[in-house]
Length: 508
Image 1 (spheres, rainbow, N blue to C red):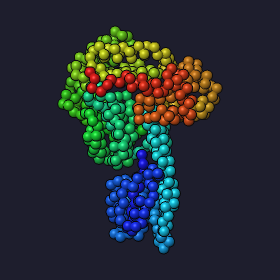
Image 2: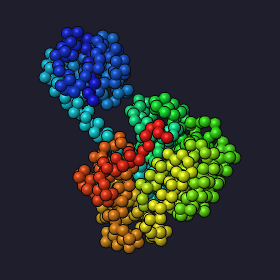
Image 3: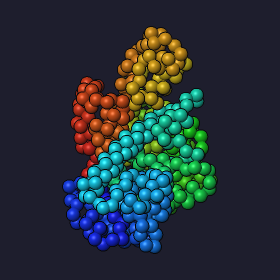
Image 4: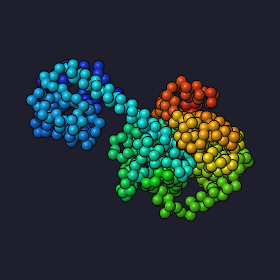
């Protein structure tokens, strides 16, 4: 994508020379607009949002530095190149305070302009790469926190601080398509760029069947609900199909991040189960307005989970109950199966999170009792094969180490570093993990990396090379070889397999 340049110059000859005698296309740039003074230039910059601004200082109505000073509040990353004469160099100290990128002295030479613009373009590209890398680290960290049970004692605050995600308060919005056979990821393209146009600080990840928005705020101001409603309206107007929303409460404690996320999930489920066709629900509304029929559904599902086992017979019984509770309405059926899978996988925890994710994805496309039964029977079969030992028999140290691996698995974890963190010797820790779990420390780390990779690969917005870096591999080839050895397919083949499992939009 070309870099947008705006030129503000009050001398027509100079302006014409800058726009017509420089080959801007060869610099991968385009002239997004010009203006003859600072007042018009300010309005133009706000309209076209340029990457680079070339501006004279001395101009009528408003000088160039006044314009830049006002723009800095709206466009802090704008690269400003000042055009000035020798007799105007007293403006230099003021320009430095405004973080001006470069100066070009009159008379202007095209070679100087080209060199300055090329330097600015390289800096813009570098910052974009840093921003992209940071955003992927943020997404990976959030994904890790939401998909693993966070225990007391872990420094979640520091984990969020390390990737620039800590705020005074936060909440979650979960976005999910309402229509049958809508492919969640296919309708979510462009949401990130859409949200970048508003002042709210957000981060989005694809998780299971939905888009999860993590929204950061400076404080616990009650205006957050108005902000959430505006975001919902913005997204609902932008996506091509009907979607439903679940919104959590506003929270300040990061040790409750997973609980807050589950609030949004609960609100989303209540939205799907609503008999009134509601498309958006706050968790606070769930707590205060749940009717008797909804409470009865919760009670029956809870009773079903209490009796649940991993047999195919129980999968059939559960499917019959769920179909009855849904009233055989597609949206209600899929919501109930998704909730049941989440509750079922919590009762029978598995080391194979990717299969649980697959069951959640499959749940969103069921249309009848036979398909529900097949989905639940497959999940039960996977859990029966899971050879994970009973974690209740693990020592406290082993439990804490495994949790540490789950939360930091995307990093370059080494046995010595983890042993030092828990103040034990590496030999002792290695022997303990191997003896109690039957699996080597390194294998636990690899398993967590692959689980994170599975989820990231399910999002086509993330390139395979970025997935490799996100799970701690600086060398893509190493990630490729490890993934192929453990999964018996390449990362691209895994992504193609996921795509082939998605029903075509509109198919019945």
